[in-house]
Image (cartoon, rainbow, N blue to C red; front, side):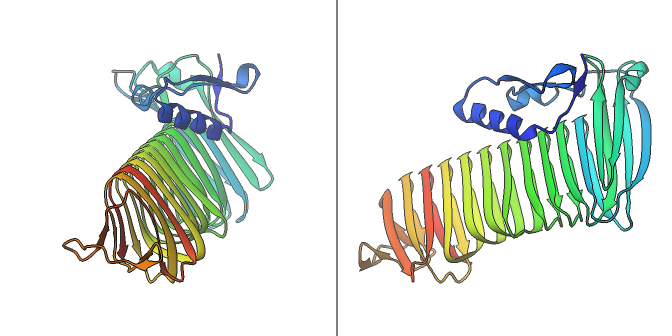
Length: 352
């Protein structure tokens, strides 16, 4: 049965996120019709991590692939992989240079069963990894250089993705592996089911989405109209951020946000098991709606609670301690809205 990877990773990631959050066994999903469809199991990450790689014990056999394609500086590159890492680097010029290494610890004949198909469509290049055997022990590692203003769409099932220096739009998604994007100012999405997600050096006018089911999410030096960050089992750390809207959710992990909040901005943070800490730079004001079932609420900012000035006691660092499980308060002009909820953990609002 032929196995190919279509561009449908978002659905697989959503199914895994739902199954993990509900504590249910993974589902078996068939995507696409005919012999070209993908059969993917959204099993728990630990069971899936070695679904394709590491099943052989013999000496490693390799086969190299190389191809150069001219697409222009504003072209688009799509790459789909089954097993193996993807590394994208920016380069000058108009060419896409594709270097790939097939690897197996099984019989060398398995290497021939895996095809690397490159389709040229004007200013667009599509690279597809096709496994023609029902079972094999082959992984393919890609190193691709692209024009620095090109746009990217990257998908993998079992393998990490790393992108650096690309100025065009970037979307990177994998089932089992880490996603790292640095100096990619137009990053639109970075997602992993079983792996960490790390982004840095991003500035987009619209929305930016980053998430992991089993792994942490870190974002540094990011600017966007809206930030949507999520993790089921892992923490979320955001530093040097500027955004008008923030949605950050974790089931089991702490959430930290350090940066600015805008006038009339909306910031919503939810975690079931973990602390929440905000370090804010000179906010004009905010209205705080906070709820912690088993934890305290602390603030560096003098707030008005229920129409009266905050006269609550302070901790050793000087932060005011509010012991209410649920509270509503206002600081400054109250223009921004902070909604923070945690079941088990403290809420801290600090001055940066």
